[in-house]
Image 1 (cartoon, rainbow, N blue to C red):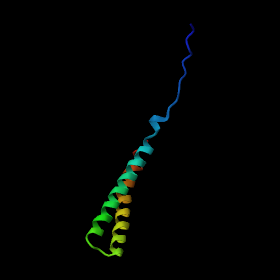
Image 2: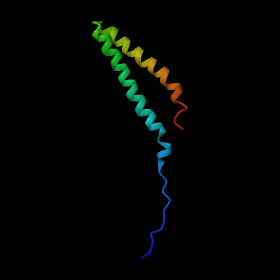
Image 3: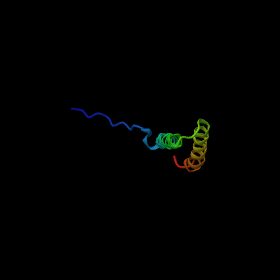
Image 4: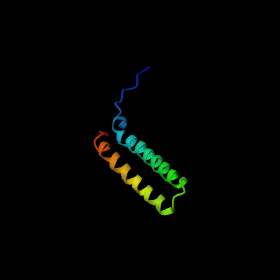
Length: 74
């Protein structure tokens, strides 16, 4: 019985860090922004206040998460 030849396979598992960071970052951004909007809306705020709080939350999330993530997935 002959043996099968060994093949070296290349798997991109070590290069998938950017996808993990993107998925976790998106989930974090969606959850924190939605929580902020629900909290402001529950306080009987006007529609304009809820919109301003949502946009402010998105901008704050982008500004706080983008710089650390730009160098982490290598």
